[in-house]
Length: 290
View 1: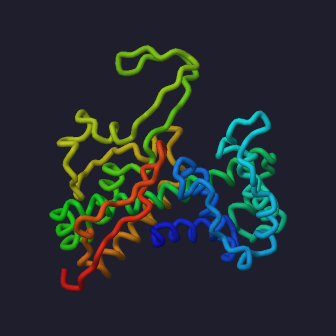
View 2: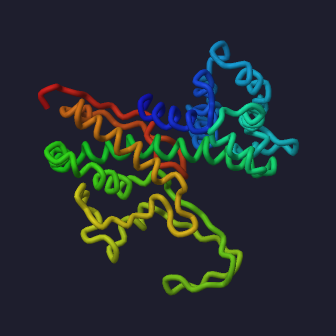
View 3: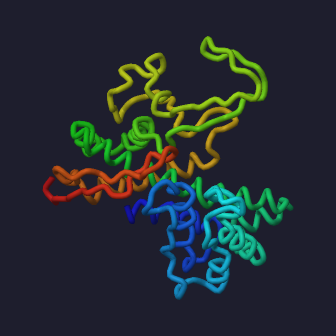
């Protein structure tokens, strides 16, 4: 999935102010956080030190080589200890951030060290993996519904609604857990303060009380109130950018590769994760005449 991996990384690097030479570090950090259950991603180290900036090479010195805590338990892959190299890089970048970059603006905002690290983490990882997994997942859904693919080729103006339907059918995030801050009733159930509540996006996106014929993939579906970006105060801050990236990619694929199809008999290689609904490899073929 080199193309779908590159697009969000290039975009985020530009927004954050990460030099081009260090972009691959963003891929490694995301792989380690999101793919820690997958042996291909868990110890991702694909950045070539010889191509990194001095700042990037210095960050590698902070990368943990032992992934166990002092008590012998495995390090939480999302902990500061496991991501020491990412946070070292973030602080180095903040010393001389490119003007107008998000990092420059965070520095100007006077965030605490913890706030800054948390925000950098969210931009570098959450803004990367979701689009990276939504694109191949959405394309797989589209190519397995050939009637909808052909409809979209005839009606490219429906690309925006197609992106929403792709997100509904293939939410990049499997689930999200929240903690109740007070006692509340929901769906006929009593949830007590402090209890955990898990939302499964694929289930919510097929709620028959919200979506007519919810299992049907329809690129012209409207309205389409899916929850793949969350809801209310937890709505994804990068939703607009993600939609823009997916729409641009899909329009380009439709215009340049109209004869795209899945390779017969090939099985998509799924990411081993209970959090991200991802594909590592999606074998496709292209014929100029369809």
